[in-house]
Length: 321
Length: 250
Image (cartoon, rainbow over all chains, first blue to last red; front, side):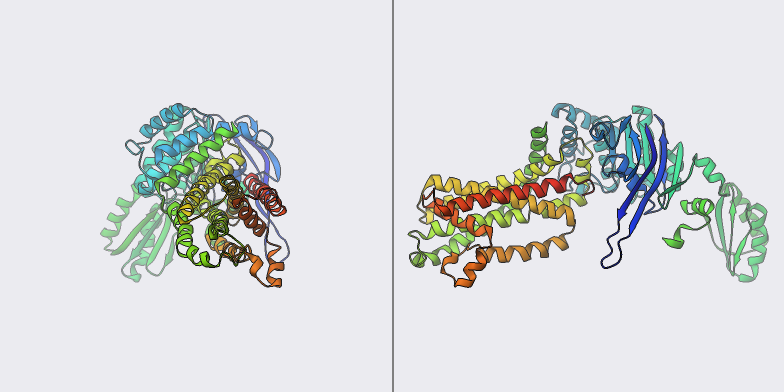
């Protein structure tokens, strides 16, 4: 569905008074996505995710390289590409004061669908995406999750075979995110769609994607299944905070028994990576209890993009963010 | 295909404007206030200004003011739409970029047309007399000028994408244009230097042309210049507008 070779985009930097600088937003990426795949495009803000997506969706011309999307060349057959794809951008797709149903009908009609067809398809999508009864609601009066689902409905109104989702769950509460994930995986089950989504949440990529492309500084640094990527990071980060700094050493010893990495101790805080922390923690707490080590708090953090990055690039995302 | 797309965009814009008509009403109230509160001041001095009827002098000015200012600020709505992602969503459809612009301009043009008719109608109550056909032509020139301004405003909006940049730019253009176009009073009563400066203002020729049209003088040099400038501005506005809308990352 997507085949890109050496796709690159440079922007002319606009420093006032300074010398002109070329900013390489995307520095030659190769992307292959097969029909029916759900592929995640993972990277920090500014890594080039959206720029790549905008090139693949014909919103931006590549400065180098080629890409065929849904069988059409993005540079020379942009009309055909647009007809075949759905694009759900980060920034939304509807006016806050418009009515949801009218927005989706107008959007469908811009694809050349008749008004009747657009309405039928729109109502069908509202039903599938749990937007029943919101046809005449204004987006400003919707919840964040509803608005996001409306955006997805907008992107699907013309039955595209390939759907691009740019940061679909950014800014949503956990419940709305989980709900949206179900809808996104449904796209493939119900419509046989191919889905290409960007995210900076590892758990999201994990929950949805068959394959993940990791992008950093405009280049793809890894392409693998979520499991394989996570295997590179050894486990969840478990952090214990003891009440008495004198007991930190003893706590570190107990943590070391279940840890997959070395234990870091910082006065009262003891941390290490533990594979399958959920299973190990109850035993750890019992052991700490038996040793009369008093805990101030315990925290378990699932591997994050930051961790993947650290493993892949040898540096943390936050260092130069 | 192109006209259907233009119509879809136009209909959407019109629907939203009618649902929240505050701006349409404000845009209409302003020239009416001018007509009611300023017009009577002109009546006793109309003769000195070289006009038989104060309103054939004043209404053309108000029309151009409507065309200029109503439309110049049209771009603010576009920035809001851009921020909501609407522009991007429309640009990812196969619809013509020019249609996306034209549909929006047509909404502004329709609004201007209705405002112009209300203004002229009301002016009759105040004692406007003149050539009806001339008024129709005058309204057409106004609408074309408005279309040019709306296109330019949309282009500026899509380039700056910021109300904070748009507002000072537009205000710094609008006030000198208003003052130098002879909208409230004809420039001919001013000193020589002011007249020379105003000679560089295309809208002055348009105001003067509409004034002549209102009195029924169709084939004069003044009218000709007004028509030429209107067409030039119209073409330039549409050119800049469509070019901006076609630009890939606008």
